[in-house]
Length: 307
Ligand SMILES: [Zn+2]
Ligand SMILES: [Zn+2]
Image (cartoon, rainbow, N blue to C red):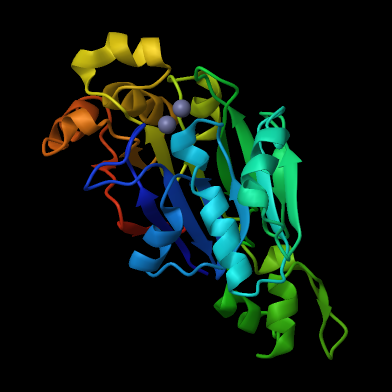
């Protein structure tokens, strides 16, 4: 039941020799999702061995540093004889622009590419045990972030108690754990509440894309296991962050602290901080006492269950 996040691109606006533009790969139990797809994303996927087989791309906004990797990836998937459909989720009004990227150079993919416009504050992808929700953000253009939120898991199964009650070791254990009552050979009925604890929360991962610090992210990132936030600038460039619709590392950390997030990854780092990224970490640590780091290209983190 793993959830693994690989930072494919952590640079703001333009690529540098150290960092590619924005892209993030989330592998949840073998299913791969891409959040943003900056230029060169497919090559980063090869370098860092994430695998290519993505089922969904979640786009935060239409700035080039978040989408210019789409045409190359689409065409390489075709080259590899993909037949599975690919869903691309985009903010409202973005369909036409994304369509033109999908068909760049007159390309017609041999597999279905479905573009979904999704309003901020709704659900982009509703899966069996989790959903990917859209989160309102504030940038210079229509934008949104995403929250991958897992459903609650069943509570812990009290094996000792079940044996005390006379439940035979075997399939009845599993049925009780899944919330079913079972009848024993002597006619007694055991209900799941007798042997299963309170439901336990699933994991929660939030990726903002480019944004000012906003209330909707604080709400979406409540108790998040990992918040990945725009941290384009250091604290002394706060005015520039405001002007360009970005956040400072300190502002990102304030959001994380208010949300009660457990871990904060700072990303979309301006090229002006090449070689002195620790500055951003220091800024953030002044206001956030959870685990916090400036993400680097190729870095992979596991997201564990909260308990
Ligand atoms: Zn950007
Ligand atoms: Zn942007």
